[in-house]
Amino acid sequence: QVQLVESGGGVVQPGRSLRLSCAASGFTFSSYGMHWVRQAPGKGLEWVAVIWYDGSNKYYADSVKGRFTISRDNSKNTLYLQMNSLRAEDTAVYYCTLGNGMDVWGQGTTVTVSS
Amino acid sequence: DIVMTQTPLSSPVTLGQPASISCRSSQSLVHSDGNTYLSWLQQRPGQPPRLLIYKISNRFSGVPDRFSGSGAGTDFTLKISRVEAEDVGVYYCMQATQFPPTFGQGTKVEIK
Image (cartoon, rainbow over all chains, first blue to last red; front, side, top):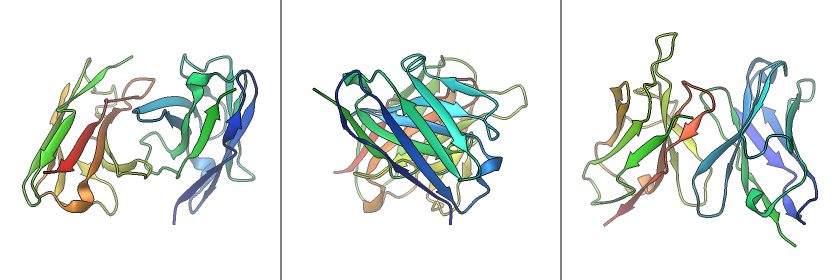
């Protein structure tokens, strides 16, 4: 079955970096665009970034542009989110989701930015 | 960005009774390809979001038929014909017609 498993979250100080991963299985990963969406504690959903199926195009929310980088390794069926210059307001659960319709979501990984 | 506005923000319902959630977009969600990319997501307590409905009215795989979606243009509705205990959670509408994708604030469905 289709499965997305995020990892790499943790507690990090402001200004530091973190890299999230999303391992995909059960579908042809290289055929689908992928998104990262985040959810701050007690809040709603916020789209973060998208990458085309072949990595040719990448787009970001204004709130993370210049600090976060989305990438993928289709040979490893894995999606990444490199997060630099982290801020307290980046504290959230980060989800990877499949396809433009966000058909399937992972369980999420928690990022806490705190000194 | 397209703003998605949901009403109500909270919906206490009796088990077995219907529930309805509205979602209004700040612009038409009709894409140039003729499709309307309006989806509904369910997030049960402590769980990730799950796709229920896509392109206004299409139920995703495994979604019970008590869930239905309708609407057009800028006004959309999610209906639960008979609420069950497992339907408790927060429901979000989402548009993917125009970049970036945006979500409604969420509607909390709870049992009276």
